[in-house]
Every structure is written in C-alpha cells, then in structure tokens.
Amino acid sequence: MQKLLIKGKNEISGSIKISGSKNATLPILAASILAKNITLNNAPFVKDIFTMIELLRFIGIDIKIESKKKNIKLINKKKSINTLAPYKLVKTMRAGVLVLGPLLTKYKKAKVSLPGGCAIGTRPVNLHLFALKKLGADIKIKDGYIIADAKDGLIGTKIKFPSISVGATENALLAAFGARGKTILNNCAIEPEVLDLVSFLKKLGCKIHIEGRKIIVEGIKKIKNKIKHKVIFDRIEAGTYLVAGALIGKKVVINNIYSKIFKTEIDLLKNMGVRIHTQKNSITVLKSKKLKKINISTKPYPGFPTDLQAQFMVLMTQANGLSKIKENIFENRFMHVPELKRMGAKIEIKNKTAYVFGPTKLTGAEVMATDLRASVSLVLAGLIADNRTIVNRIYHLDRGYEFLESKLKKCKAKIKRI
Ligand code: UD1
Image (cartoon, helix red, strand yellow):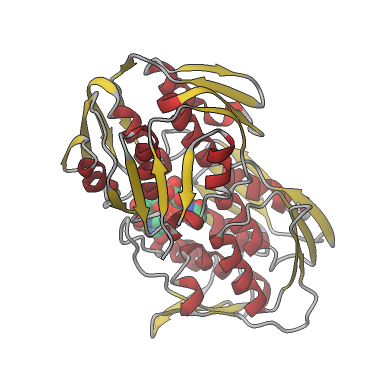
C-alpha cells in the first residue's frame, strides 16, 4: 500500500495552480444523463471522478477523456440505457446517489444502491428521497437498493428541506429539471458547487432563479443539444494550500481561483494574524510568526466549511492560546485528532467541540489517514513537524487531491510517495 513520506521543517515557496472542484464536477457528471452532448473542462482527474465516470459508462453514457486539454466528453444518444447504479460503485463514492434524480426524471425509473455510512458519519439519504417523493416518485427500499418509479413523470411542486443538504439540493435540482411545471425548493444548500450545477443546467436551457436559499426551477421544455462547461475551482483545495502557506510558506501564491468565493476562510486567516494578500484571481500567503487563537464553527456555505476543519486545526496547534472548533455538520469528523496528538498536538474533544492548545511543537510520526480531509491535515502537520512523517492509507487523498505531491514539491516541500 502506498504511503507519503514527508521531511518536515522545510519552508515552501512558489505558486500553486488550483484544480477544478471535485464536488462541483460530480453532480455535473450526473447531469450528463439529462443531456446529449457535453464537454466538461477543468474537472480534476482524481479517483472519485473516475468512479463516477465508471458508473456513467455502466449506465450507458459514452465518455471520452482528453487528458491534455482537461476535457471530459459525454455523449448520451442511446435509446435505452441501464437505469441501475450498483452497490460496488456507489459504496466507494457516495455521490453515486446523484444519478437517482436524473435517471428518474428522464427515464421514469431508477434502481440505485443505498450508499451506507462512512468514516465521518452515518450520512443518510432521507432528504434526497423526501424531495423526490414530493415530486411524485414512488420510492421503496429493497435489498439495500432505492427503487424509484415515476410512471407518469415527475411533477413540479413546493419543497422545503427540513435541514440543509448539499447532495439533496443537487438531487432535487436534477430531478426538477425534467419535472412538469415549476418546482420551488426552499432551505437549499447554496455552496458554490451547487451554483455551478445551476449554471450548467441553465446552459442546457433550464430556467432557474435563486433568491437566498430559495431555488425556483421551471421544468425543461427544449433542451440544448451540445454544450460546454468549465468547472469552478476547488475552494477546499485552495483553502488547504492557504493553510500550508500560513504554516510554513516563505511566499506561496495560490492561482486559478476567485477569492470572493471563500471570503469566510480568508477573513478567519486574517483574524489569526496570517500574512495574506488577496487579489481577484490569486492569493499570496506567508508564514506568520505570532498566530492568534480563534474560534470556528462549521456551517453550510457561506459559513466555514466542514471540509476545511481538519486543516485549520493544524494551524490552531501553532496559534497562541486555546482555539476551539465546533463541528456542526458531521457527527464523527474528528478522526484526525488522535493522529495529530500522536505527533504532539494538545487537543481535547468534548461533545462536538475540539479544544486546541497552542503553540505546540509537532514531531514526525507514522500516522494513518481516515478520510479525505483528515489525510491532508496529517500532510500539513508533517510539513511543520520535526523529523520524518509517514502518512499511511493515502488512497483517501487520491480520492480528491489532484497532483498533491507534485504541487507541494514544486514549492520545494520534501515529500514523496513510497
Ligand atoms: C457534500 C460534500 C462534502 C461536504 C458536505 C458538507 C460532495 C460530493 N460532498 O456532501 O465534501 O463535506 O457536502 O458540506 O459534494 N443529511 C441527512 N440526510 C440526507 C442528506 C444529508 O441527514 O439525506 C445530513 C448529513 O448526514 C450531514 C448534513 O446533512 O450531517 C450535511 O450533509 P450534506 O450537505 O448532504 O453532505 P453531502 O452532500 O453528502
């Protein structure tokens, strides 16, 4: 099994080009079921994207990847396709459940494996099913599968989500796209990745209007045959490298971004005393000597993202005083804490809150990655630790970080895959 070997305490400097967003690409790939001929540009070539591609090929979409141009071409012209998403593909990547809405709305039936839990929590799909039922789907759960039918097609309606979910908002949008009439979705997730899906669906000819957390979708009448779309940048990847720069950057420039999108994170870094200069499409960050303690609470966008909680925790280990992070989104997202403690971090968890005492000197150790963002926090800790850190189970990292080692190596970090 592959591992990452990091020799810590080496200042990093240089520029990092941020890849396209994995979490924006996944629902847009699922939306290709609704379309005929799509060219998707700037998708990151990471494991989760290839799993979604495998699922779409299984369903019957023809897919061509142009690696150099960073294009994925998707053609769906077959009369009949497979409306099944099997367990073996959905279990490795929960976003596979996003094919449910498009299959159901276009082909009037779908059989999609229940994704099951994962390391960070139980992660149910009840809100996805709630929305689809409101749109008129008949849904049963049998043998671990969601079996959905909408013989007469889905019908637009009013839906108010009892709580905010990114995936459920996306599935509902994808289903409402092909429903008859108008759907009004209330209490939606408005993450930039959801908005990228909306702009993609609009290019297909769908009329969508957003007011705060309300999204109004007019069921499609005439679909555009051929469209191109460039996926937005990965704000979580960008946030991760900002933390790296704040920890040990002589001067790190993050490129290919749109800084307005992650104002919350930038403001927090500024409040901690991080030296950071923001421009419209790039950010420069430098190591800061006296970091101030801070309190963070994870929330749906525009709040602080749960996907950056682990990375910011590493930064807190270097801040003066007691910092706190409250995790409100997932019930089990502190799996990186025992590993960071093995490296010398002083962290205590009480209920949903992690109390981080700093500054502490971190020492290299052999550590184990548990999920995507937890793994990258261990890499960040390795960059500032004394001696050598070995991160095991890096297949988690490969699910979502494109060219992690080469991007860091280009900035002179001592990191290699063994
Ligand atoms: C997406 C992101 C993930 C991010 C998360 C929160 C993708 C592929 N993944 O995941 O990286 O951490 O948003 O920003 O985009 N919930 C329910 N019932 C449901 C659905 C969700 O109770 O039917 C709960 C979840 O357990 C969780 C909360 O709602 O506690 C938010 O989850 P959700 O926004 O749905 O996350 P995902 O879409 O799975």
